Amino acid sequence: TAKKPKIFIARAIFADALPQLEESFEVTSNQSDEVLTPEELQKALVGMDGALVSGGDRIDAKVLSAAKDLKIVANIAVGYNNLDIPAMTAAGVMGTNTPDVLTDTTADFGFALMMAAARRVTESEHWLRAGKWEKWALFNNPLGVDIHHSTLGIIGMGRIGQAIAKRGLGFGMKVIYCNRKRLPEALEQECGATHVSKEELLKTADHIILVLPYSAESHHTIGEKELSLMKPTATLTNIARGGIVNDLALAQALKAGKIFGAGLDVFEGEPKVIPELLACSNVVLAPHVGSSTEQTRRAMMNLAIKNLRAGLAGQRPPNLINTDLMQN
Ligand code: 8YV
Figure (tube, rainbow, N blue to C red):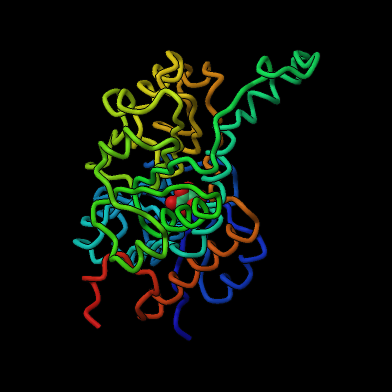
């Protein structure tokens, strides 16, 4: 019988998925909470035919040069800035991601963060827990800003951005967006979204949400200059990637009251969060949990496994990123 392909699983997956994988593959798995260092990951991939990885597991030319047998890396995430796709293509290694299955879950969470920032949900809780709730008062309790009928500004109008736009319509919001490419008119109508320049969006939106992929071009899409264009009553929510926002500039703007509040699921240098942000009360912080529901995390895992299986069976994986590797 033919030898089973070897796969490496870099992050703990739902344990009940392992026996089936072991039927088809020789599995080496990091079923621990420990994240591999780049050196450990490089070593672990030597001799492997395939790998399951996720955000933070960097696959670059250095790793690839040691992993001569590698054919496919299946990322358990839709964002794939951890994969150096040009280097993978040059090495003939397929890369896949997990789009669609997390769209609605992540859009829900974006809305949750935005609403929590606007209505000061965590600040209110801290205030209550601190024993400050002595009476009802017209304005002495934490006062928020409204979501309904305000203007929602979406930067990055892919699948998740569109799902957020539709949620905005349900709240009676006016939806504006900017994106590298303008959406086809039919899709704009479906989302009830109007394309505007980044500057107009920054100046006119009441609530801005970032849903664009991280790249060299999107690095610090929001910095001091952009924050200074926003309304002092506006909120900023980042569910995309750390690095899209200059976290220090944001902390300074929040502290100075240049914007009303922020909701952050991702950070520069995560899992570390800069103390300047931790010191701000008008920011709602979450540990990168946008896609984190039982159903969706399972769907992401299953889709990544489906991609891995296809690639190792010599078929075209359904979510192949470097499509130029396969002509048919
Ligand atoms: C993942 C994400 O949980 O899909 C993405 O791009 O950011 C999340 O869904 C995360 O990447 C895991 O590292």
